[in-house]
Length: 471
Image (cartoon, rainbow, N blue to C red; front, side, top):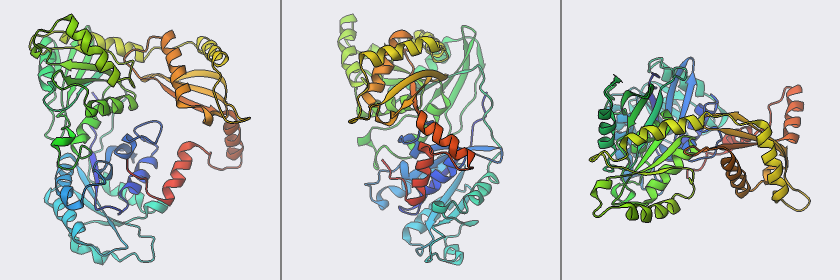
């Protein structure tokens, strides 16, 4: 079983440089959670590796609604961070004298009795104050950084790994990890217990800590399956500071750790925006997805007609994941509960299937001939060939020229054709585009000892100039 990684939280008042520090610590290690940057998830949680240590790094700037007043949400935010994190990084602006907000952050962080490190960012500015001005916050050690110029970041990483165990995720094993995702009170824990109780051959029962995830490992048809239960995310109207806060952390971790996610939805409260958002996070993470309507036993007069009437409405609201199967369950009566295991095994088999390059390229050429990709005047994308480069999720790379002009709708068109040829039900499939001119230019740059010009390279250069805006 994989070792559970420690969690490090970055907290502090606005504009102290938390997001820049997060981007430096994550991107410097080339371990962004999503393989293609630019998603909301990138801005919230990332995996960092430094000196044979791995840990989750969480940016609270991405978890807190930027429209909220500081006083309204900071205390709860820090309490949640302290509960969930093993180490807390308090970031302050070294060009400004510590204010009341900084003192509140420091006091709450220290009260958590977790290891706390003070990071005085923007130390490259001429107006940067000496460390003595920040000692009154009561935090040791104090590390001076300039996230903009990548200065002092290694010192922060070294200080972090001194305070966490040398955890490292094991190599992939043969355990299929399934996470139960959804809002509170949709029946996740009930389903968790029902699924566990259905099996007589329990392999292990690993209890989570108060900040961890409940999990249990069992056997089904000779396949070890680890179930991961989450506490859930409250609806937006039920939260004081919006849904983007630290209660999201456990769900994000569960999604990252899992291979397949069961997204549970209460039959009495379907089609909420939060359910749709969670489905989007799961798909963006490249995980398998099953839409599970729970508490089916509570529906009066239920029959096939009722189910057939509900299904189209649910499908319309989740049209951005049309490949996700929909199932109606009841943990009370046991309806379709065991079928969830069968679905998980089927989806995992599809996630690891390999396609044939010749079939893919015949498909691509037919697609281009039937519907050539649109572009600008005298500048049209040319799609030359396609290969599958990865599994879990299936990943396809298309080579050609002027590929930056390929519209998102054309990508959906190609995805639909691939899905019509190969059964990828239950899993997202990913695309990358490689411009042959850029590949040639990068080879020439490499011959001269220069860094390649890639999307990630350009984003890293932009990060040096300004902080990434939060969604």
